[in-house]
Length: 348
View (spheres, rainbow, N blue to C red):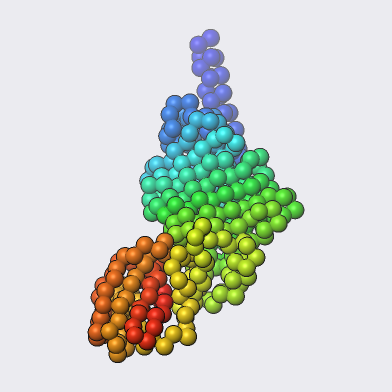
């Protein structure tokens, strides 16, 4: 009798293992329960007691389905690759360690990164290898993403902010990178959804950007910087600004610059940096991590401001000079008896 019960137990366990393995290979979900604690790496927190894994050799790419009010926190350097994830209404997913989302459990090779509340923090780098959508139909609720200071969210191809649901991204000192395709806000107006990015501080580096404002999609810019690399994109960005789709914070104006390589957009509380008609001969420019003041023919007063309008350095010169300065984007003025002109400095 005992042997029969033992055989049945072993058979049951084997069937459960086989069922879960097949499901994983087919790309099904492993649901988060948070039954024990908030630790993503604790198998007891998952419905089938197995941490979702990505195993390219065996075609295992289980989706992480966060579908409960119990918070889920990923902070495990040993988990460097996952399939993809979805965060359901009322749930939260915090990413505190770097991870690659390598493949979707869907038939397409792209990523539906849905989410009610997703926070990227603690210096984490999230790398999506193909295209990605947030605010997808699979979540049934708006998506709210936060990219905090020192963190990076990187998408290899197109990144759609809103699909069938509204989506908002707050960039608070972090970086969003869209490597080789388009950052799309409000990409699917047929679903009456909006995509909003609040660039509170930090950076967006995008190969291209498009905004459909039919239902309120827009890019709000405060202290952050948008860079379109390796192209003069001033006309396209100005069109978005003129259309009310790129909006500066209160009391600021959008500034768009092309430095000969990249196009840079930011919001400034200082005077325009495009005063090219000034007769002032003194020049101020950034080279690497140094500021160079050149062609000084008259006593010159130089003021350097952060892009929020705060004065960070003021000095007077009677001859050419250069000095090291901390990295960042600045604007400022140089004043002589000839008049005054403005300039932009990008120090690396």
